[in-house]
Length: 324
Image 1 (cartoon, rainbow, N blue to C red):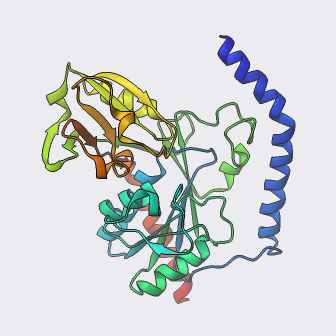
Image 2 (image 1 turned 180 degrees about the vertical axis):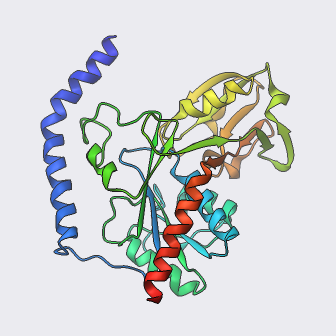
Image 3 (image 1 turned 60 degrees about the vertical axis):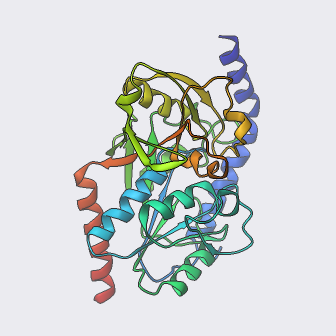
């Protein structure tokens, strides 16, 4: 109780600062809307997948789903990402051969899982241009995050909201919001990842683990049912991973870390021989130090079928408008 009281008191102390932050956010958005700040369109439809809060909410699995879905429908998607946590001087491609420290953890996963060109960098306008210059067959761009990156004009905005909703409802630094909650009304679609917000529903599925030292060694999570396992997660909502494992019948010893945490192997030494299970996003940062008792659980997004129909129709509208 005291812990929550302290957090609430701190939030109220920071509330005046959040008002200044909110004013700056609104002014910036207005300046882009009035074209007083320059923005650029890359010439192919741009789909932005983002959220209003700091931290992950399921954006990357949704980007993967969109990329794979569009490929199955004859499109040639490219993926643009910030490459959070990596030191990137300019636009560059991200591949499965890259280290997470070089391009970010999520781009490595996106490259490996999607088979699409994945490019990273802080300036998404420059990244989009570089990607298209290198891959002239790309006819649609999907941004992993970037809802607030207004310099790159977009055709579709998709906001993901997870079970945490908007926290205390305050803007940074008093709360988790990067933009006011009313911003949700201006996006083209809301994807509800276990939240009470109305939108296209999304769930994450996955119950097949693979050993980090040998990906050919695959086991159903049921093989660990009833066993104690260490579960490690450096994602936006670590509890989501722990609860997922618990629902599969595992006795979870949870070890939460901050989103995008730069792991060292020592942090996964728990003084016993129990299996250590982790997310795919965390595993890419530990490939160089893999241990036989480390296991990875990839997850896949499952979307409301109506979402795919909506997405295709909006892209077809874009094509028709350009052909007119």
